[in-house]
Amino acid sequence: MVQKKPVVIVTRKLPDAVETRMMELFDARLNVDDTPMSKAELVDAVKEADILVPTLTDRIDAGILAQAGPNLRLIANFGTGVDHIDLKSARQRGITVTNTPGVLTEDTADMTMALIMAVPRRIVEGVQLIDGDEWEGWSPTSMLGHRINGKRLGIVGMGRIGQAVARRAQAFGMSIHYHNQHRVHPDIEGELQATYWESLDQMLARMDVVSINCPHTPATYHLLSARRLKLIQPHAYVINTARGEIVDEPALIRMLEKGDLAGAGLDVFENEPAINPKLRKMKNVVLLPHMGSATIEGRLDMGEKVIINMKTFIDGHTPPDRVIDAFY
Image 1: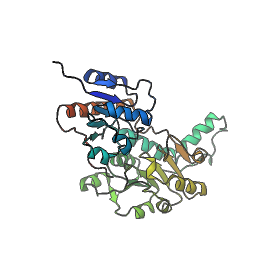
Image 2: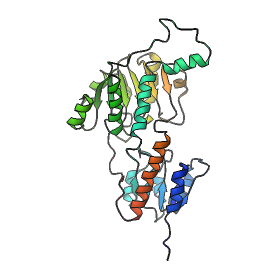
Image 3: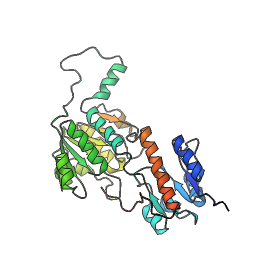
Image 4: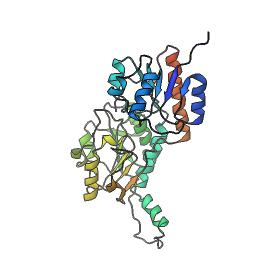
């Protein structure tokens, strides 16, 4: 007797190679047109699926999980962040949750470093000057930005991505500082020549560039609150390639408007895909459409991890990327 393949419902369009492999291994129901699922459609999916493969755009909250069918035993998230999944509700219902850590580290760190360079050196402004046919030639005082070499970089969240950012910034001659829930191993500190700050407040007050690289959890929601943002020096820049909810966005905008911060580089937003119109008008802010992890190689690696987690779970073993606790 041929064993029935588990029903796998995928909420968004994935790379062709990933979808092809899923169809070979499972009874995969794909989202061919890539239209985000409505809440009602997500409810239908959890009722029918043995395995759900969501992405960060799908909010799998307690209300949706309360309607899950008895066969749903695994949520294999396509992505590292799991702040869109109610982990407590999943655990109470005996549903395992996995993610795809590690594979996006280098890509996200590359984008972080790109923003660290782009904002102080006014790269986007320069492109716009050319595109608008407004450039009148070189002059000694035209398009002056700020040097990166020798500046102090404060990394909030020294996990895989934070460390990868530190390695890149070190190569550009930046001084590395960090705040983390737990101090990293002395060997890593030594390699990165990184200074640990137990107090986030004290670190923020002394940095030239602040890079946010921690996950969004209840503990990190508005970690950079209005009060903490005011601690940052007026000449400093804020870079966020993590999650928009970690920063009090209205407070950040107010400070940028008043000149209390030199600028910001944002790949994520508090209410994305909506972007505050005030941010769009600021010349000292570089905005990107949540593309920090958007490489072909990264997406294929993510898909491979999802498949490995599903296959391992179906075979009766603990998936390698089972989510237990979120920390920064």
